[in-house]
Length: 346
Ligand code: DAH
Image (cartoon, rainbow, N blue to C red; front, side, top):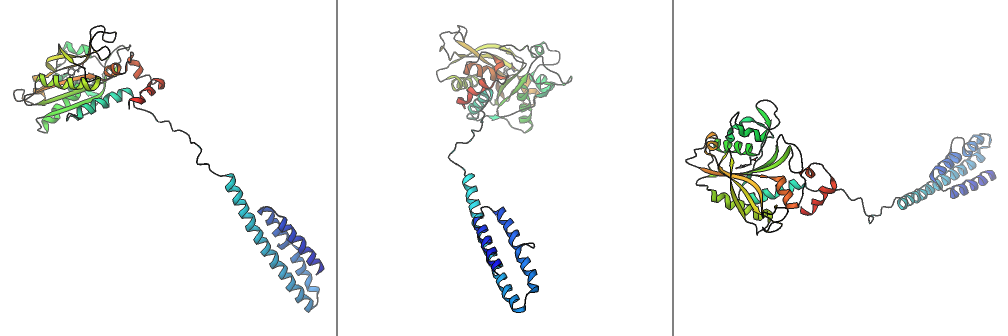
């Protein structure tokens, strides 16, 4: 019995001194386990007299109970301490600044395209798209450029096969729109068609085998050249400033008659003459004209009943003028130092 008490004191002290749960488990095995002293005492009890056995048995049970409770209490204290320590260690400082996500910006050509779309949507136009791999029919024939016509030489391109090619101008979408509107029985058309076009061209500071255009088309009753002029003046003012004026120069396109080349007064010098306008005060921005009767006819319209105007703008050209870019290749070489500077125009 003396033994038991001494032994209990040691165990109690060990439990109190224990500072982590893993060690506590070892103590549990050591004192209460199968090979522990309690079991030893139980075994030796056989040799005792009956009363002594009962007395010792009760005492052993008491000690066993006491140690179990103590172990349990210690375990929960240690567990709480461990959680508190972990919380302290893993504390999140939500005031620390995080990693800045890299947010891109729109490409300058997309900025110009969206600006053109905004101008024309505000005038009630729809925006239409067409395929970049186009049929000879829509790219040339419907545009009044028959097979073997010399006008095709100016727009040589990449052919997929004899009938399919990479479109050379968004005028092909104009031809598709004409056909579709006619099929749907609509008599009034107001669309713009932005997109990529391709030509067999040597790449230099002002030429690229791939570039972007935005086509415009209006068809209805009694549409006149003066409507075209008013529309393009509105466009020039929106894109280059309210003080801009435009002028028409006679030109030639197979799909328009009459055809014009449109200049806008220089937005850099205001028309006095500078290096951008090459001293003339004027900058050429697009080609346009009244839709050729043949074009209307081929799409199913009667040129005696309706008329229309069309124009085609080069998006790179507008972007180069607006942002003062002197090399068209800058748009396609993906230099982030160049592209990032357009964030401020979004
Ligand atoms: N398709 C012409 C080109 O690529 C541009 C153009 C001129 C489009 C006159 C038109 C137009 O719709 O009426 O050079």
